[in-house]
Length: 531
Image 1 (cartoon, helix red, strand yellow):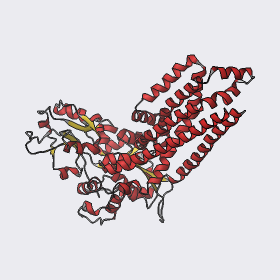
Image 2 (cartoon, rainbow, N blue to C red):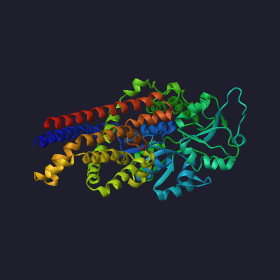
Image 3 (tube, one colour):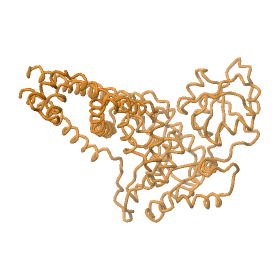
Image 4 (tube, rainbow, N blue to C red):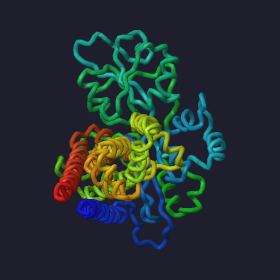
């Protein structure tokens, strides 16, 4: 009877902890949504206009320009840093976002898979069956290019991409998307007969790799602010391989009907952003550490007179602050709530599925290896690959694919420890329970589970701590959490921003481990007191 009472107490404490976390995560739903309500206005559109952006500086800034331009006329949500073209395009087609800034050459090569440039009218005709449209040229061309850093004493005097073919010894560090794009490295290497094997680098850290001589050549965007700052030599595209990459808006065709006033506000941006403007805004973020929202606000607030010159980067926004300012800014609490929500509900689902699977593996020996092998194989799937596969399968981005991915990664330690814990229950106790007339269900509830509880809790603790770290990748598909700061830090090569995301995640992991260790001690103490 004492075992029954103590097991009930231990399980009751776990249930109370779960209820507390549910209450905490319920608050997350109320506080973590990054929807900005439209200010008071005579004309406002119903619903929320969802704006997307890719995971590089310029796209973040343009996304904020779009959001702030539309904000007086509709509630707006900027789902920033969603990833590469495939992910953002998938979100647009699925209706998770309504519009995002894109480039004409990318639409031709990556979206429509065209090998040759065509007219804008033809592009619109081909996008229409997809439910998409393209409009509002923003005013600048941000083409791809390759660049290198000229150093004193260098024997290489390259000026064109054709010159690069004569130097196979040079080390190329290219962004992962550029390496895989149809209009990127494969076609470029074929056109110029380049034999180098490029190394994949995140675009945000490529400049650091170049200055530290880890690579000799990187891919750049022509509006990158660091080109002038570092004195890079941009290799001329002498065979005219790259198409034009005029910045435009790629949108769902129903946006004008659903958000007529906000869409007119976005259309007013046509031709207003010059290349000099964009370089200055990129510099404000990458060199001076300004926030994307303040850079966009400063650009929108400046006089839009004809021929107005681009503002200096130093006038675009207030200082971004150091590590402490970035860590404890106004986003810390919403990001924490988002992160806790992802971890808690994914672990709840993993326990609901993993513990029964562990019991199945323990009591049915012929199923054991199959169950453990299945969850083991799921654990080996790379996290980003799993997210990329879940987006088309689920037809959406954001919280749900992230929850499923974290659930999958939480299964192995829970299933394995549940099976191990059940197998460690002494056979004599089970025989005694049968002799006392206990039914199989009662034996499971009052004998097996209480004795296996510490081992099961250890598995749940391992899964939860791992999930806190793995949840940072959720930001790559717009699910929020501390990973948002990490992705921004990668895009800007900003170590303070990276630490502002990594340190809270590490603290949360330690707190999670501490909570579970307290529960384990209480459960173990209850077992000893019953003896």
